[in-house]
Amino acid sequence: MERATVQFDKVTKKIGKKTIIDEISFSIAPGEVFGLLGPNGAGKTTALRMLTGLMKPTKGDIRLCGYSIQKDFEKAIQHVGAIIENPDLYSYLTGYQNLIHFARMSGKVNKERLTEIIALVGLAEAINDKVKTYSLGMRQRLGLAQALLHSPSLVVLDEPTNGLDPAGIGELRQYLKKIAHDEGVTVLVSSHLLSEMELLCDGIAIIQKGKILQIQKMQDIVKNSTLEEHFLEVTDR
Amino acid sequence: MINLVFNEITKLLGKRRLLVVTLIMAMLMAVFTYAQAKEIERTRERLGTEDWRTTLQQQIIDTQNRLGSTRISDEWRQTLQIRIAQQQYYLDNDINPAEPGAPTFLRGFIENSVQLLLPLMVMVIAADLVSSEKSLGTIKLLLTRPVKRWRILLSKYITLILAVSFIIFIFGLLGYLISGLVFGYKGWMAPVISGFVVQGGELDTASTFIIPQWQYLLMAFGLAWFVSIVVGTLSFLLSVLVRSTAAGMGIMLAALISGTILSNMVSSWEAAKYLFMVNLNITSYLTGQSPPIEGMTLGFSVTILTIWAAVALFLSFFVFTRQDVY
Ligand SMILES: Nc1ncnc2c1ncn2[C@@H]1O[C@H](COP(=O)(O)OP(=O)(O)O)[C@@H](O)[C@H]1O
Ligand SMILES: [Mg+2]
Image (cartoon, rainbow over all chains, first blue to last red; front, side, top):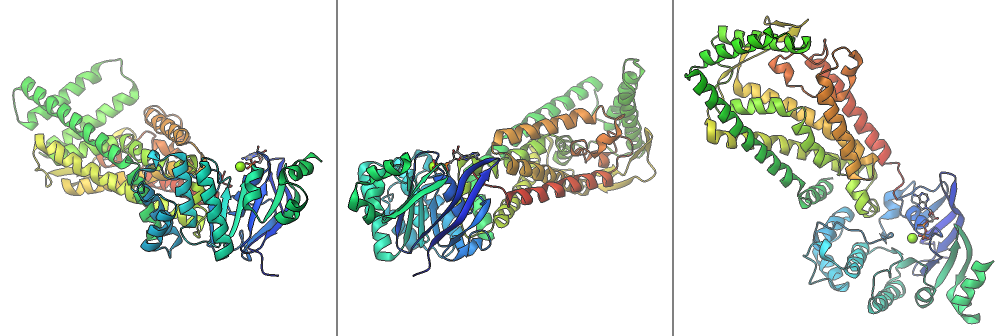
């Protein structure tokens, strides 16, 4: 089997005495669209914070493209584009200044790529406005542009559909599927919305109270029941 | 690294804080220039002369009269006596301590700004360099790029040093240009006496020397720059430690203000001399005022401030490279 793009190995996170993530393990293959599904407060964001090196696991190791995020931070993170929690950007700068800012940090991003990505997320007209004038949906798009800028091989999106209108959600879904299946980009999304995951993901992990309850390929689930039934069944136990 | 610093500068300018600081300073310069012009005019009317010797003589007599009053504290009495001795020394050497002109204004202004005004301006910049990224949430993007955390923090610290240098420079430039409108732009070469030593409440003039004013200003601005870097570094640490810029500024503000109060009343609490905020009035060693606590010298203050800054800088990096980001 190919080397997994993402590998969680018995990862635990405690804050104070509280165990927020409890020995979770899963891996994601290249080109897979993988969903972390769970109710609010399940620990999805915490897991993604550890994946991107923002937090240190209390125990366990996380590998990205084979590199440990803790020991080999730069190598592990360089192929990752992420939006964690909200698409927070510098509101006092223009959209373009924001993108330039992150392009400078990643190196290897040229003007053509910038123009391309701005067109892709449909912000060409507003790109020279201050971000504080943007709507939530526009910020979400700019956040996406920021995450895709350096052509990452792993895209991590935490609740990406918040603030997008149905058309935007549809577009995003098409785009994520396209880059995953055509370009081999691995996509990791988190969500509490079952219906969304059903349409988007190839595989999901159901997470609740810091524990992974089940990991499954979407086709296996969809075969027997709808995801919703399945989700309720699993979380009820 | 240059790219990172460039990013930080873009953000600093985007926040417009430097602009605000510049405007505040310009306004204060204008106000103080006006106040001083008024003061000079009043003295001239009162004494009916433009001769600085007469004016200085009169100032000495005025101060002596105040000394005659029984209701002044011993410390204040000492300060006044030292001032008289100094003025007398200027008079004896036939040197005008306040040669009219923008450079002289600048000298007085920097001496009075080094303890509070400049530190405040620097604090406004430094206190949110890191905490604003946290409260905005942008730190998540900043720290998920292939750049090690210490490099990101270093780029911010370099930006802070650049900003402090800019503030000091603008301070000098604005002060010169604005006050020059009223007092004229001459006086760089005017002689200034430095090297007064205050020992046991007495003014010691043995090691005094005369230098041209520009040289004196260079020293004063150098010391002001140093103090500003130290205050900036301490604010920087607070900015790493707390999430809210307002809280960081509040703590620093309290420290700075307590410093100005303590300087006037701690002569009997000796250990206070190890507090950074008691050591900020560093140009007073150039003018030769009695230090807040007996035995404090320029070397002592520089050492103490350096230690505080070094510890703060170390802690900033130590914490920033390890902390979990929420
Ligand atoms: N800084 C923190 N300190 C203590 N508990 C936290 C902290 N951040 C999150 N938690 C707790 O961790 C749990 C998981 O949070 P989170 O990862 O944000 O969940 P999700 O993203 O799945 O909604 C929640 O119960 C939350 O209260
Ligand atoms: Mg969350």
